Length: 266
Image (cartoon, rainbow, N blue to C red; front, side, top):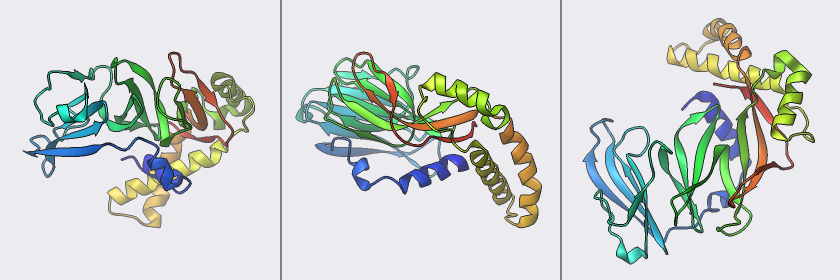
């Protein structure tokens, strides 16, 4: 995991409560079938994990590679399903060209999947309608997703959105922030301290390189920090800001009250 992603997740986790993790519906039960050692990832096990809910089952076939080999939804009551690598007759498979990753959670009739890797300090997620297998929504978030009401056609989702601003705030100052405000509807938001975000990212990058060299000392950090600063200073500004979206037929992301944050893109 990139150091900046780990850092941001740790920071956010200190701000959220354990209740957020329980915002998804709890499965009726969960079953894991061990398929033996992974051929592609030594030291790990291939497995099938099935999450049973009242009206459908979510199946994740993980062979130890990046992203699950198969993500699927099987409609019908729990007692009618068998957790197996074999395809259930009623199994609806998520097209891997449309989404690749892992099961995240369920809210009502909506099924959420994580991406198989992070981007710009956040993690992508997708929302599917369990009945139609249609992708309802996708975006990139930092930290947990929370809900303001029960799952269904009008489920309201809240999260911290991560987006590439398309310009470099520390270099272009007010003109870049003005573009970002217009682009994301942040007219009422205060400009984040991008200089501090860029410097923190450079420091973390330099520390990571020194640790990789088994040279976590001031001399190594002094050598690596200048290169890290040059690299991060030329990267677009990533903006993280609180939003909510109603997961209806035409979902629209709307900024909510809260501070925006800023750091360089990957």
